[in-house]
Image (cartoon, rainbow, N blue to C red):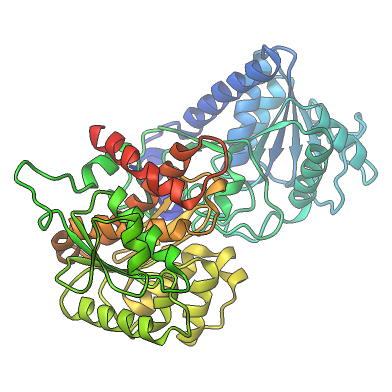
Length: 522
């Protein structure tokens, strides 16, 4: 499992090591220099003669960049540091100057500028910036093979980069938009993102690679900031971090441990019976796709309730149409607001689930039928627009754009207001339940943004909840992990269905069994 910790936990883990004289910055800078050298060899074949530009702010990330730049300069790279603050890490700056790196001040400017050399403040290798030097800074960035982003660190609370740093971010984006280069390596986090909450408002550096230290910071796993991180590589610098993470991401071994695998004495009832109240005569596809996802995920039996019974049976003759005892429910997919009969069935099933401790997946047309409070084994699966509507119904002034800008905060607010576990669908899926730790899964290709995909996800999640129904009721933290598990399988099934190309929801459902088989073998 990939675990991410809040900045406060990182600082608390660093303090005793720093007090004991452990050279954490040296460890980080060494790893950053090594990884940057690998990138340079990939893009131009060698380190010697390459041009590396450092974007340097006032904090420790700027110090990491300066020390790493000094190491690269000693290996023959041409290194230029653009200083966006009047005060930067002294030892790092001295190391770079001692390694014959060039230093250009751009601090205090609203327009990016760089000096033409010579009129320094007395420091070796240092140029003062002039107001008319913006084109030179653009030229430095355009000539770089790699840019190291050390403008802001883990104390950043979002809102983007400001001041001279913002001008550097704009210059970098302008150059990359024209030339398609240089490659950008972020130091610990991309500058400008909300490190703890994953927001990405204002000027933000968009990296190709983020080299992070000790633990991936939440912004590297959370939308929308995760899109700015590129590939993420974590360097162990010896931090002793809490067992409970702020954000977690399931990996293959976690999925294998969580999946309900039948034993030698299993039968269809012990493997889980899933009730599906979805679709209608007008929208039968939602019912068929939900059932397809559940059967593909290996549920023991499906009972379908609703007007799409003939279409469900035509696709899956093993389904039982009609009410009966179940261990979990999938409710609401393809249920229209004016379908009074199916909405009544959804309302009755949801009330039964809450009263009898049966886990339930609540999607689409069932979300507005949610009682005021539900237990954590009721899992909501909205997209951003549906979540905003749900929150407005609970008295919150929220738009879809608000949810998309801060998915974690709004998913948590929904959990607080309802008690439910919340799976917020998106390019990066966010899952929030009790006790703090959130899950994010980024297993799906962009091709999965297609009609009916959410219906398949609901079926997969319903199958997992049915197979582990008693566990999900006993442990209120488990439904969040199972929801993340379903998102992982759903995303990987999209890749399996047609690697690198378009998929239809029915193709995704058909690929689920092979993905599950691969996971349980692992």
